[in-house]
Image 1 (cartoon, rainbow, N blue to C red):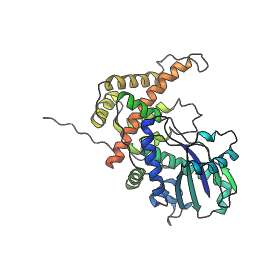
Image 2: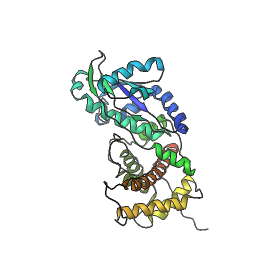
Image 3: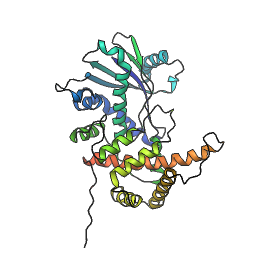
Image 4: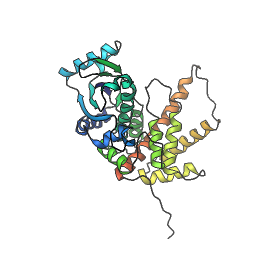
Length: 323
C-alpha cells in the first residue's frame, strides 16, 4: 500500500531548521526494524517477530515540480482541501505480510501506524510535525481509504520557551528516540510501567485532529511533569520548582511563572476559579490565559522528556547531602 500524507511544520521560522532535520532523517529510517517494532503493536506480541508490517519506506516530497501529482490525489479524496498551501508530502510505501486481506481494515491499521509514528516524531524534533488528512492507495493506483488528521499545538510550547528564554529544549534525532524506547523496552501502545513511561503516555494525549477542544490537555501535561519530578502528594509545586531548576536551569522569571502555573492548576482542579460559560462573549479571554499556561507547561514536559532521551535514562536521580 502507498500512503500519501500532507505534512505541516511550525508557523514560526525558528523551527524550520528542526523540520528540515526531520525531512532529511526520515528516509534513512526506511525498513528500520526497531522503528517497525514501535509502530506495529502486533509485532511485539508474536514469538516469530512477525507483525503486520513486513517493509516500510519513507520519502518526503517537497520539490515544486513533483508535489502537484500528490496534491491531485489529496484533492480527489478531499475536494475542499486547500493543497496550494501544502509544501511537503510524506510518502509511505508499506508492504504487509498479508496485504490483500488487510484492505478491509486498512484505515484502522494505517491510522494506528501513523498515530505512533507522528507521536515518536514529535517526541524528537524541536518543531511540530502534523499529519494532515491523507489517502491510501494500492500499488495499482486504486483508492483504498482516507487517513485522519493527527496534530498538536506544541508549536506554541516552543514559541513560549523562546519568548521567556526557558526552558532550553533539546533538538534530538528520531533514531535517538527509537533507541531509547528499545533500550528500556518501552512501547508507545503499552500501559506505563514507570514514571518516564507515564510521562510519555501523558504526552500522547496532546495529539488529536486539531478540531477537538483541548480543555483536558493541561491535566495531562501536569500529570506528566509530576510523574517525572514529584514524589508523594505534599509540596508538589516546591518539588517541581526545585528539581526542574536543577535539570533545566533557572531563569529570572522562572519562580514567578511556575508559581502562577501551579496556582492556576490547583484553583482550576479544586473549583476555586470563577469562569464564564462556554457560550459567554468573553470566554475567549479565559481560553487565552488557559492556553498560555498550557504552552508553558508543555514546554517543561517536552524539555524534561528530551533530557531523559538524550541521557538515555528513565528517571532523574537526586540526593540530599549533609556537609
